Length: 303
Image (cartoon, rainbow, N blue to C red; front, side, top):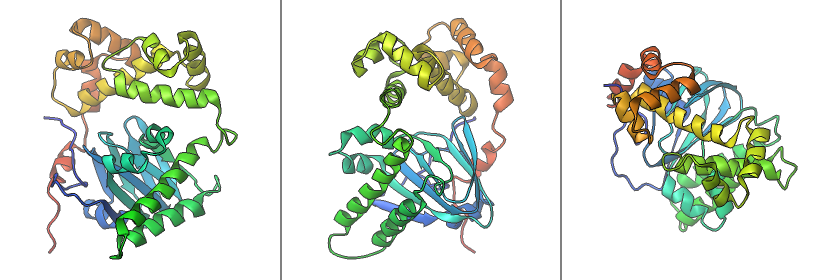
């Protein structure tokens, strides 16, 4: 059965731990698996991977990047991700419960959906923020290792500074105050991610954004190079690909989960958007790392 492994931390089963923050070096875990972390996801966790040096091949859903030097990756719950690192890699992985991240951001609600999304940010030095991100990560790690009065309050304050720096990365090229179309596009994508199973109707999303469907289409064509409907359909196809690659569900069952009661119609829709039939796609992308991922369900024992 091809299922996406869901771990608390990679190679560890869910334990119900209530630890507020977990951190570790990239090397400490990845070297146990030959510097290769196979595709997996976390049910409740939000992770920040800060690459200080070395090389990382990163895959988040359908986006794959090779990062060299200071870079940042954020992974919210249920997002499939994998890594392959060079042996000389240096960096840190921060792991928090998503609920705690949202709680820290409660007073700045405009940041929540932007921060709680997957991102791969390469070459922090070129953006002029390498020092800021490096400092924020390192101070958070130092505080996590201290046993001092007010530690949780300090951790929350340090985390807020890091999340604010990450949020500012998204608007760094938008003229400071942010381009209205870019911000609307990000808000629209967040709404689609939350509601694509429930509604394919563009007016539904336009209404939530307080704009007309025509305006939403203009924004999407400018930012995404596609219509508003195409953005919704692209998200549906992405989810279908996840099920096809990482589950044993039938084509009919996947279609039903995604709102298509007619298997033939779902297959035609998928073929039109993905360029291949669901059965063909599934046969082509059966993950070679699936056995390795299952083996990772139990961490190696120390000698």
